[in-house]
Amino acid sequence: MARLKTTHDVFSAIGEPKRRVLIEQLVLKEMSVNELVDVVKWPQPVVSKHLSVLKQVRIVTERRQGRFRLYRIQPEELRPIQEWMHQFEKFWGGSMDQLDAYLNNLQERDSDEQS
Image (cartoon, rainbow, N blue to C red; front, side, top):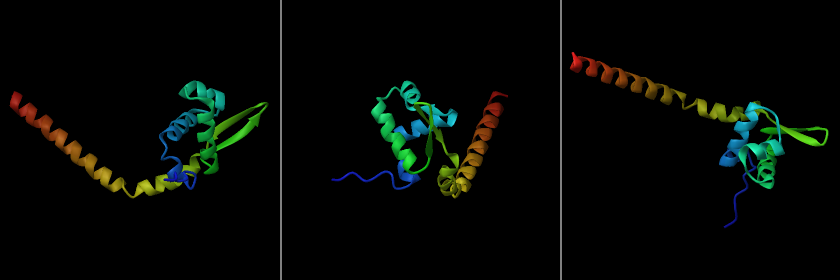
């Protein structure tokens, strides 16, 4: 079976766990391939391959500085993910409220039992 292309859009590109690791590192600061290799401890060709995919969907940009290429995250390109996730916030908010009420109930019951 042929492997599906993962460079179609931002959603498919970040579906790969290694790419998410690179994004997390580049959120911290602009880095070269060698700096990323040192941090993530992967072979340089693996880092370069995943950076290439992230560049294709414009999550990452590169700029030259002397003989180095520095990579940086383009957070605005992740906006489609944020917008898609936004529709689920109402479910999470309700779940957190329920969890908070449940924990408060447990705490009150423990206090009553100890009295």
